[in-house]
Image 1 (tube, rainbow, N blue to C red):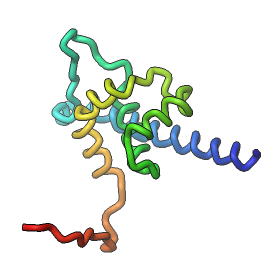
Image 2 (cartoon, rainbow, N blue to C red):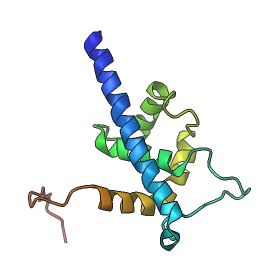
Image 3 (cartoon, helix red, strand yellow):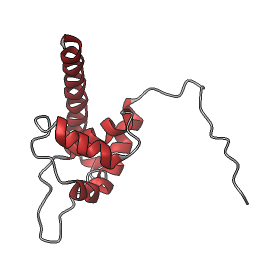
Length: 131
């Protein structure tokens, strides 16, 4: 029981660190007038903005790609069940998927600028493609 609690606390700390890094990055992008093409303020057809912040959306996407889940829908329902306190304004699955394209450019920019360069070791899929 204690090991499970310590593992859970470790996940919470890493989640908080990741969110803080992404949130600081989004705030820095908002302050820089040259990067206004990165942050698209999309509104729905009724003119509403999303309940979740861009940094929260990006955090969930980074968590998914760093998790062992193969299916985003399963991961999202796991997130809704186990991390509701971490994301109190969590959108429904269909609404989140609708907002995902608006995270693409800022998320790509964040990942490109915050992760280390390739060390030269790469994995290649050698599946043959019928031509």
